[in-house]
Image 1 (tube, rainbow, N blue to C red):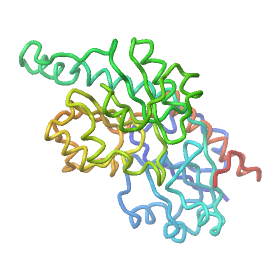
Image 2 (image 1 turned 90 degrees about the horizontal axis):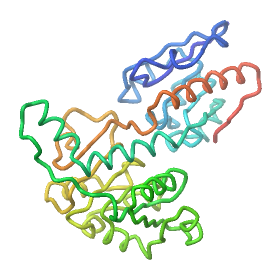
Image 3 (image 1 turned 60 degrees about the vertical axis):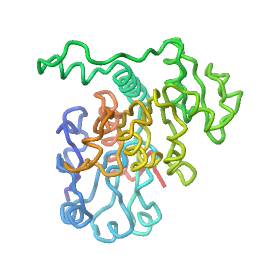
Image 4 (image 1 turned 180 degrees about the vertical axis):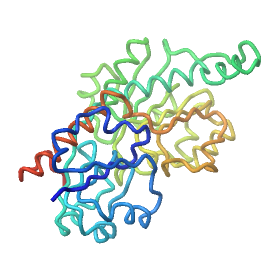
Length: 319
């Protein structure tokens, strides 16, 4: 009997092009969904006849209620090896195997610097003015050399962001709740005495923390108020680490010079979401992991996960 595999949130319609699905073609029919299902009801209806689901990053929550509504589901493949929106206990109760894939830290590092440089040099407004016949040079760029880059988090991504900052001649400082001086020294960064000191002294602050109970809401109104009016905030990590309303207020009131954001509380972002029209904001639609090489890994290893499951020997199990 042939199985059906659903690939969710294939926004660019590339899931079957960047990887070779032929190894499972004799047993599995693959259907891709370029649209996002906004509600559990829509998702349950769309996936009712599928045995396998491939989900992209943490786009789609899989709570216990959804597993209960998908009696045919046998395998759930999530890109990446960590996923905070899947109820693994519920998956086990319903007999669903959950597997992951590798994920490169290179694309989010590169996007972080694309956003930081875009903010610093006013790339978007200057480009738009040039195309629209606006003023010739309307912004005054912020320098990187000799300025302080404050990193909240110095893990796989944060440490690579730090090394690029050092190459630009920046003074790099870092802080997280468990960060040690020895770890900071390994990367060439200084250890900030506190989160508050980092915020008060940095010209650019970039967030590179995992979302947890300790980091949720880490930057709220009080913390953003400690930043300089000439400083910039970049968040390519998780939206919930920065309190959205506090960030919107800081941008509207001009208490910080600007922000760049690649992650949002709701994704895809609704058309009337206030983050779409906020001043001093450079925003991208969660492009941190979106690169050709990363997608080839995601979907190529998803095929491997399906193959291994069909052979009765699942690989890269999560949970």
